[in-house]
Amino acid sequence: MEKARHTSLWQMIAAPIVWAVHFCAVYAWTASACAHAGAAEEARLGVALMTLAALGLIAVFAWRAWRQWDLLSENDHVHDAPTDGHRRRFLGHAGLLLSMVSAIGVSFVAAPAFYIGSCL
Amino acid sequence: MQDEDAQGSTTAPRRLCWGGGALLLTACSGPQSVLDPAGRDAEVLAVLFWWMLGGAVLLWLAMNGLFFYVTRMKERAFSPQAADRLIVFGGVVFPTVVLAVLLSFALSEMPRQRDLGEGLTLRVTGESWWWRVEYRTEDTETPVISANEIRLPAGSRSELELAANGYIHSLWIPALGGKTDLIPGRETRMSLEPVTPGEYGGQCAEFCGESHAKMALRAVVLPPEEFAAWLEQQAAPATPPETETARRGQAVFLREGCGACHAIRGLGARGTIGPDLTHLGGRRTLAAGVLPMSRAALEDWLRAPEAIKPGVRMPAYGHLAAADLAALATFLEGLK
Ligand SMILES: [Cu+2]
Image (cartoon, chains in turn orange, blue):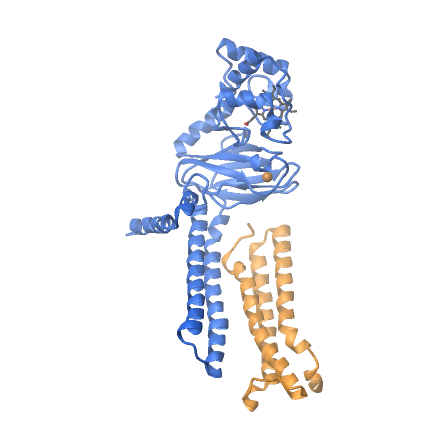
């Protein structure tokens, strides 16, 4: 597994996938909680839990991407050579940036539930 | 102090608005303007708009200023570190912070618009190309039925239940609040808290067919006591015609079978396909906001409604004798 890192895109797009799943799940959950029961508190609690879980997962992926990037040992963020090492670090670098964007996206998606306390 | 604040918040944007050039001037104020709010909900939207606009203008100036600076004023190569820093702060941190602040501000303003009404409930049904309007309060047993005009008491929040018959419509009274869709088979809602008594324009804001653009309405905001008196008057049956002409008009109304589609409570007409005409003459406009409420306009309408609203679901009565048409218009206008 560790060896295949320079060929696999999964590590890089794991965080955006968490964002996409969180997005769909939050919409579906809110719609169903509000339509079936009008239960605003339940809807918000669910959104909060899903958001914490998503941010936690993204943090894990961000950490793994950071390690894969390996910035500190090389102290170089240009990875443009056609070598396994450069490919691995490039994917890590991109993965870390995408993790940050995903974390922001997840927070913004959850923000309405933070402010709006009703199903109306 | 509080007063000053409240005033400042409405005059400052307006001044900005007036500064916006001749073209913008005409669009800023008036009875159907988002930027000339007459209710709480519209105020929230206007405040949001001005903040967003201010933010956008600042960002635009900053971006272009920066661009100008690096291309015209300081033409030199940046060190890689400086470039990195610029990308991280200018491209990541700054937009994230700005977006988060604007989003939080917008969201924090939103809950107020979702508040429930405090007593008066209107049921507004979107029809093909007019609005059916029913009023319910705690002490009215049967709803008071009207059409094509919405009246609301100033200073309290009213609930609007929204429904539709046939097609999707959207109710929008820009001076009072945002818009909400009316969807067949579903009930949607909004609530409005008008502040300033006056007359405002409304419009169907979702394409619904041939006469969509001619599906407007008038919103009249009244001081609470006036509203109560008006509602009581609306609940009463129609006043029987008093003049000879008006009586002739009533006879024409009966003879032509208008009562199959229209109701005039108290005078035996019970149709529900078209707008209730019991107090037609008291409305500000005719045919969902497209004509003034006058005898001449009524005659035009009866003669050829299709010419005024394409696709209208009312037959033309141009074949009637001129005197009959005139009498009919007199009768209808008298239904105050
Ligand atoms: Cu329409």
